[in-house]
Image 1 (cartoon, helix red, strand yellow):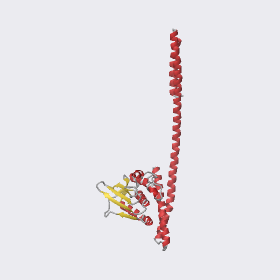
Image 2 (cartoon, one colour):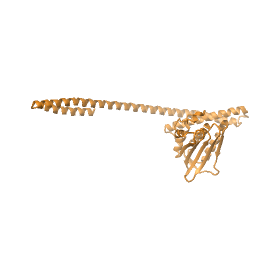
Image 3 (cartoon, one colour):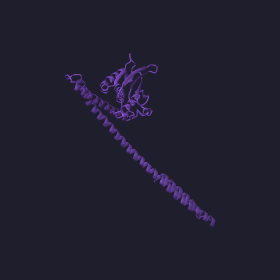
Image 4 (tube, helix red, strand yellow):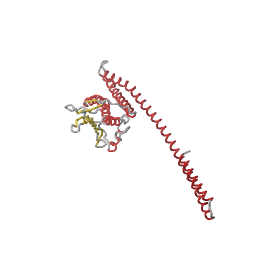
Length: 312
């Protein structure tokens, strides 16, 4: 039995015994009637008190059982979520290898490694290359998401010249912007900037996601990449500006949330799941940096900024 119930019953029993003794020992009719009424009241009170205590004990037992059921269910959900993350990670790994091979072979064919390529075939290969690149980026996003959610995201930081990463991304997007008839510019600094402590592959994914986002949401016009050093603050500042659909203040507040796609962006026919900016923010934060976006409003383009500390 519950300790509280037993204690209550013992206390009530003692009180009732004391009142009963007084009732039996009454020496006058008035005292007999008074003690009888007191005894009756105490008995009723005892019954109500014990019932109340029993009800409370049952409620606590039900709550305790419910809490245990929830704990078991939560543990099961965590296990299933872990299995899901592991499956996504494994599937992403398995998909990435053949997609990378396809990309390599398409590049070799376009360069004429297997003979001269006719113009109609070259145009088809370019479209295949762009679609394959989209798949590679999507698989990379899923892989990074599963690593972040499972707490298995690992970084290899080393002093890195950020200009090299941006130049690489700039060159990789040339085919994409040609297809969309956009202008892609890179304002490369004249002198080398200070190095930053970066994981090259992870940080390249950040730049890829930002440029990809800018290109997707720019129906016409240009996308400009810029990098500069904030010597007074000890930072390197990178930005991606576009002349695209722009964003409202409300959209800017939630643009880095998982699976977020702005209302202005929904008017443009684009692929993607809204993971790129979420992953970019997580990775930049893990680098000790900042990432944010600015826009003058819908239809007025956007600029995404990334600031990371330089290597000392």
